[in-house]
Image (tube, rainbow, N blue to C red; front, top):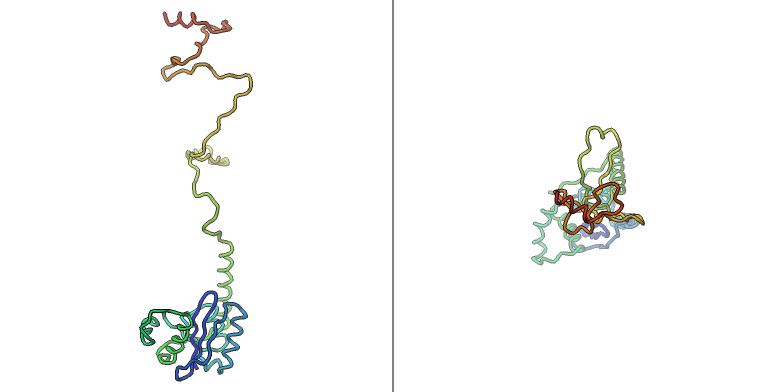
Length: 229
């Protein structure tokens, strides 16, 4: 008997063939603990585990570890070598998981003597693999997803001086964020004129400033007197 195992992340396809290449059994177990346990029990109906080799396109993983622990000889088949051998089963380009599991079993029947078999793992190596797998699961649980809501921009601002390095750094506001105008308190009015770059009031000034501290209201003649001088 020969077994072909087409591996998948959610469900597998398993095919058992006899020495003549005829299909004896075929099923699609799910990738769960119950599915793996039922598959091992179903394989035991066809013979002893050490006399039932399994061809699979994987050299490590949970399925490989369970098969080795059960006593099955595991034969890893390289994807390139398996792809090169596909024309012997026909020139059709269609690919199916049940068909691949049968081809793996038949490939193991005809060319199994040329393929390398995996050695069963000892207890120390199996324990180390369990610790490594546990660490990988822990890292995946701690790593945030790539599509997180964290902003992708960084605020810009001047570099802190040496004097301010000892104190807590102040986070500058982003340069793109618009600033809001502060509301003027009631009773305070803006000046009616604004000096230009040369210090001379602009032409749009509503009223000139007073020329002396004693003037309560700015007078037009004060401004004209300064202009004549």
